[in-house]
Amino acid sequence: MSTNQSSQEAQPQIVKFVDSSPSNIGSITLSRYAIGYILHGTKNIYYGDKCFPISRGEICFMGIGHHHVEKVSEEDAPYEEIVFYYTPATLQHILSHLSITYGVRFNNNHSCEWCRSRNHVSMPAWNAAKSFFINANSYLREELFRHDETAENIKLTELVYLLISHGDCCLKSKLLRNMDVASGNFEQIVYNHMFKDVSIEQLSEICNRSLTSFKKEFKRHFEMPPHKWYIRQRLMHSRLLLISTSKSVSEIGHECAFPNTSHFIKLFKKEYSITPSVYRSRHQAETLQQKQADNISSHQPNLNSEIIEQPLMAVNN
Image (cartoon, rainbow, N blue to C red; front, top):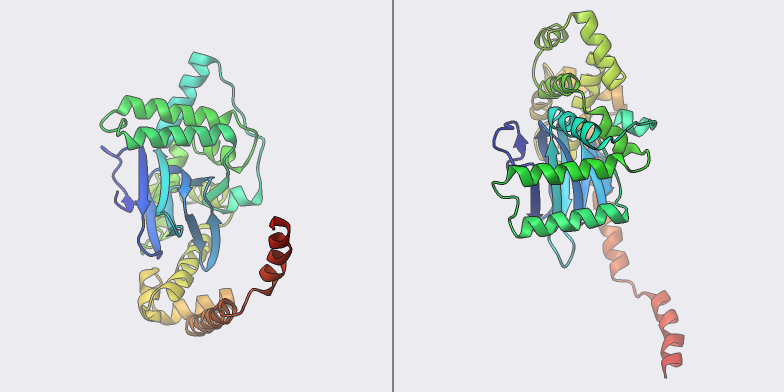
């Protein structure tokens, strides 16, 4: 599956990812919402250099737009994840079907800072959810979803029902907030222009809104003005590139859509009280110190384990 989910035509709704390659931070751009379940390994999601790990047995929602992801394998197994993709139109159709056909009522009374400020949420799967994903994994292993849109729709409907019938939480909140087709299109346009040289006036025209209307809707979605939000997102992306690539500061500034290097450095220092070059150097020094500390620790005898094992051996004898 391509990392850029820009074309929704003929794309499967249910996919299993298996990756045993060394872990590296990569960028993906989603044009559909995604709900995944980690079978093996850990998925790390980055906002700048802040890492949010999602462990085996957890469900993860990822919104439309740009994400920085690292997939880490386990020692004895590759990274494995099942992902369900959907659009606002698909979700709206499923919820309407559940309501009209089965009389299902759904509401959401949950809202928190995490839901509002992040483009992903995660939580441990409960027993019914675990059973659902294990069953979906069996279907994928037998290739029962291949070229069978009906089977995919049934399984996706089952997942949606499972989530909306669960107690109020971040995951349910994210799901129900994404049923508005117009809202989904608005968010997609915003994320699609994350790293493009486009003015707020041009964006409002692309969204078929007046400048005033665009700014109001933008703040409703992202809780800050467009210009400030775009700068913050681009700066967070630049931080990740500084610690995960060898690209020059000027290359990173250009990639993050800043007009010139000096402007990029000025905004970076204003936001983080440090220049990009110093930030990179400090991170490299801290990483080296941590590696040295880990090496020293790994070569020291584990005295605690020896003390614990002595009486156990005596008991067994």
